[in-house]
Length: 305
Ligand code: NCD
Image 1: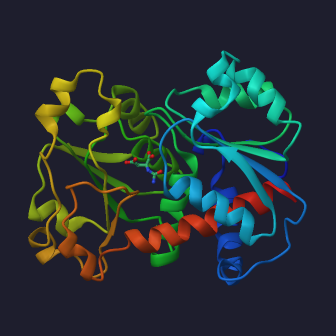
Image 2: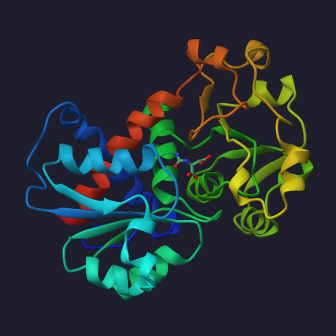
């Protein structure tokens, strides 16, 4: 089993065994998060971001720099030759000559895959459309594994935009490698896509779907995964108006939660997760950001060496 030279386009590209190897590698790289190593000295990575990002882009950049490598790229495609009419595929075939690997974020599903097919170097999908975000899913899985020591047997409650969140979809697919109980809570308009429901059924997963949170559901949860309404993915702005502000996890909700309940959020948060929760031991979302750095360091090291 080796990730060397491989692409990471979907979380389904990674087996359960490979996930656990990535997690162990991530933990072993922790000493290098505050100083610099030369594990990837001489390697160069391109960051090609066609959509806004804070933590994904900066965490990939930090990961490479902490491992001693270099980073080139753009976060604003309007300053590249794409603005002159160059095709995306030509652009990446040019950039391929400068670097050892590419990390791509794009609003359309399928673009990372198309780029991976066009170039010879490894490509990592850093979020594509509403459907996939494998490095976020590995971060989320690692957070659960690291904080609880296991994933099997846990109950994971998803709250939020289950229709448009690529983080949710990839995490569900990742969790299907383990034995977990799923609880899905969302407004009617933001329920799981039918194909995800089918996937859960095919895998024989235990899941329930609800339209509002209750103390009973929260009491069962080991993990609550909250997401914002993915405003930029709505085709119809009126649909967004109907669901904005329609759910929020508050500190009162957590009154009867398990002591070791973990609240996760891929961030950014808008108004769906009470700031009061930050002060409680349940809040793991900033820890999750740190774990995202470790996971990306592990992936870069495993793919490039
Ligand atoms: C997520 C994304 O871009 O899908 N953000 C992230 O990468 N941490 C979630 C979101 O934007 O809500």
